[in-house]
Image (cartoon, rainbow, N blue to C red; front, side):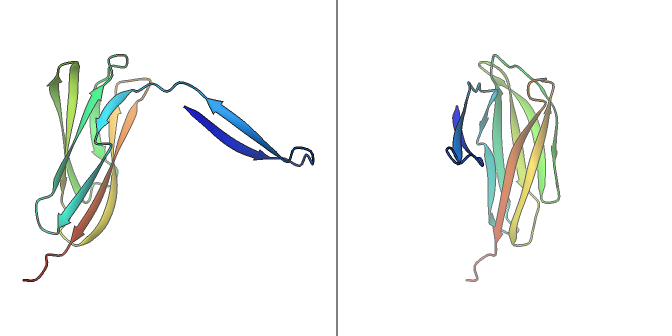
Length: 132
């Protein structure tokens, strides 16, 4: 990864300096999809699922899963078999019955010192049923 940041100074000869920051970024886990969008008709069953697969170099277990707000969603975490070792399925269900938008974050506590927490964003958008 390589990022550039502009720094402004009071030096008249060089009022702006570009700093380049670069380094290797290693993948800790595969999270598919990276966020969940729960879209549909208010009152209908709306569900989503996220798969979390630890990288072999950074094995971990998920110890706890909780929604930051938790008013509009229900979550369930299951450990599943994967050819490369343990993996997790996170199931998210919409609980909200009125129309509108909402946002929440699911916090996954791990036993890893490298990444003690993982976050999964949840976006909800419920619309009214069209009159016939």
